[in-house]
Length: 108
Length: 122
Image (cartoon, rainbow over all chains, first blue to last red; front, side, top):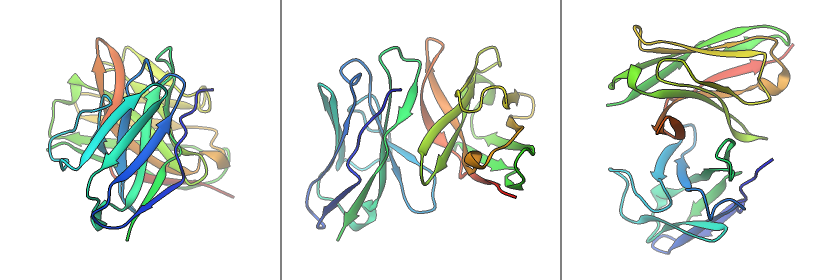
């Protein structure tokens, strides 16, 4: 079955740039989406179609994709950005929708 | 604004049944694909099922096929998940989500409800 691989954790100090990666064999062909999930809350979409930011999401959130790896970048991370981040995409056929295992971002 | 409110979760014994509901508001419910996605600490997020805007297209994950049934009532702006033959591994928070579809193909869940906890245990 298709899998997306994320690092379990990333840690930065406030104001630094946080980068969270997501790797998958089909990413050259399929879009990547990113969700932020704070403790006890539902996931919130922060990046869609690799690079687009929904309205209401701060500009410090950006996405990129190259080859089999997609990256969520938080420029000037803030304490309130502490959360679990999940990537989401599909396999090359588009039939199997999968989430990455999640990355816990610590900002302190 | 888009609101999705799940209900119906609870504690059920293995082999039992449960029906989840999702009340939608803030958008034209009948225009959108809807889905159920679940989350566990061990397996993470898993897309369980989706249904097209008028119910003509339905998908189930292999893990629930034959046991779960998704349905919707567009007149009531409501989504349902009938869960039968429940197993311990079905224990999860179940989220209702609105899905963006492109050319009739569901792409990604854009809006999520707050979730309802289902616990399967004797």
